[in-house]
Structures are given as structure tokens and as C-alpha cells.
Image 1 (cartoon, rainbow, N blue to C red):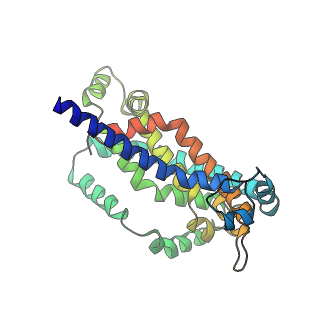
Image 2: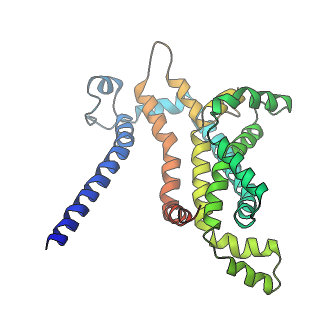
Amino acid sequence: MRDSTKQIIWKSLTYLFLALITFISILPIFWVVISSFKTTQEITSTPLSLPTSLSFDGYITAIKVSPIFQYYGNSIVVSIASTVFNLIFMGMAAYVFARVKSKVINLLLAVMSITLFIPITSMMQSIYSVVEFIGLYDTKTGLVLVYTAIGIPITLFVLRSFFLTIPNEIEESAYIDGASFLRTFYSIVVPIARPGFATAAIIQFINCWNEFLFALTLTSSNENRTVPLVLNYFTSMFSYDYTALFAALTMITIPSILMFVLLQEQVVSGLSSGSVKG
């Protein structure tokens, strides 16, 4: 009886903790969405209250004042392209890192681990100089290359962890049947590792979609700037249009939330499987 009571108390505390974390995570998003339907006066005077009436003036202002749809298109192109290239380049590399055991591989893994601790701002000047030197300043191609390169370490470790969970016997049986390395990788390993690829894809996409610093530094025209920079249109040194600002924030965060909702099962599966070995 005592054991059952302890289990009930433990489960209750666990659910309470999870509910608290969920509430803390959802509250800022909910507040931003609700504020986008309020007037600036309501936001400043009663920031935690519900709107007296649903007003879409903030969304209309956001669309009129800023080229948000053009920035949206730029972000979609850059984020999808960098995600695809990142997965293509690092998919087979992570597979080799998971299967080959050597001192060189261990050394490269150590180098990749160190790069995760290097601040992005410390690389800004060198990356800017390289992009400008090769003539890709203020181009989507330049952003795609930079985002693809920056996402290499995280994608490598996510996919490598998942590949380590796949038994070697599956690939060995394919080799015995006469399958080549490439055919084994693309026909057998990649389908099995789909959750791992989904996890790496959503991490890379969200990082690219929300990236601000490189987008601001490496672009200068509306034809190539991405959606995080649209927020500059609603702030200045002396005035703020909070309604339009929150409306723009809502429009910016929707793709990230939708992508995670659509791929959440694959992401959870990939993270849980990849955490078994590392």
C-alpha cells in the first residue's frame, strides 16, 4: 500500500512538473499571439489582459509597412536549401564517422566538438571577408553556404548518434547479397535513419529561419534579406508600434511551430534513439 501511494505521489509530482514546464513554454507564445490582436494602448496599459476586441490592424500594418512576404520567400528558399545541402553533405559523413574507427576520425570528432564552443560573433569578420571576396555578398547563395557550414557540427553529431544505433548486421547482409556501399547507404541505412534525418532537418531549419546576425551582416537589399530582419521596420530609437511588432512576430514564428508539429513524432523518435549511443 505504501509503495502504491509513493508511486501515485511520484507520478503526480512528475505530471505537475511537466505541466509547469509546458505552461512556461507556451505562455510567451500565447502572450505574443494575443497581443497581436490588441491595440498599442492596451499592450502598454494592461499587457497581461485579453484583448477587448479582435483587431487585425496589426497584421495589416505589418504587411503595409514592411516587405514581409518578400522576406518570407527569401527565408523559405534559404532555410530549405541550407537544410537540404546540410543533410546531403553530412548524411554520409556522419555514417562514416559512426562506422569507421580510427585515430583520425576521433581527432576530427574532437575538432567538431570544439567548434560547438566557438562564439558565432568571433567568426563574423572572417566569414564576412570570405563571402565578400568570392563575390557572394548580398546574395541568397552566400547565406545558404554560411548556414550550411554553421550547421555541420550539430547535424554530424545528431546523425552519427542515430547511425550508432543501427546494427552492423543489416549492412553486412546487404554486402553479402552484392549491394554496393552507396546502394546500401541510400536503400537501407537512410530509410532506417529517417527519424534522425527529421531531427537534424528541423534543428537546421529552425536555426536558419531564426538566424539574425549573419542575415543582417551579409545582406543589404530587400531582395535577399530574411524574415527576422523585418522586425527592424517596427522599431526605432524613439517609437514602437507594438501591435504591428507582435503581429510580425506571430507571422514569423508560425512556420517553426508548424514544422515541429508536423515532424514531432519523427523528432522525438530520433532524439530518443540517438541518445542510446553517442
